[in-house]
Image (cartoon, rainbow, N blue to C red; front, side, top):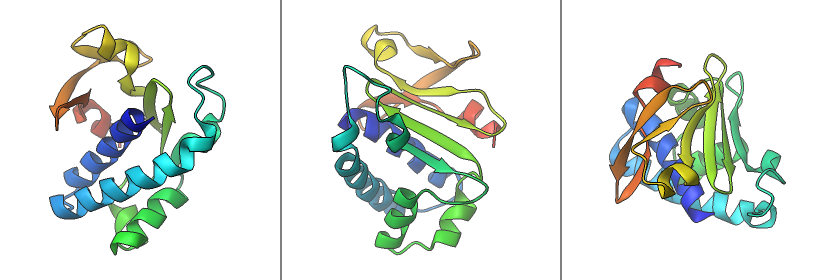
Length: 154
């Protein structure tokens, strides 16, 4: 669970960095959000049945309405909700499931942020649902899908 949460949180952190939020604030945001999500997901994490409880493990911003986990994290580190709304896409859903993290925006196909099978097989690329490939990057010793294609969808 911790690995999947970290991939999702790093993805959000990169979106915030791309919009100019300072590394210090992004790191505090990532740390706080990670702890909150791990705590919240403990009762809905079923490795044998990855889709069970998935509705409780998605982060959603819809028409600017901020997911409570994102809003609470921002509030707890002193970032206004309005500022966070201006930095993140207005429509995005991120699913955090056992062995898989993916997202889509209103105008994009489903993109994979993390898929355990891709990483355990040693592949250097991962594909989204439309068969497009997005390269992986390393940060703090961890690989994850890069953002250029993804950001063009926002």
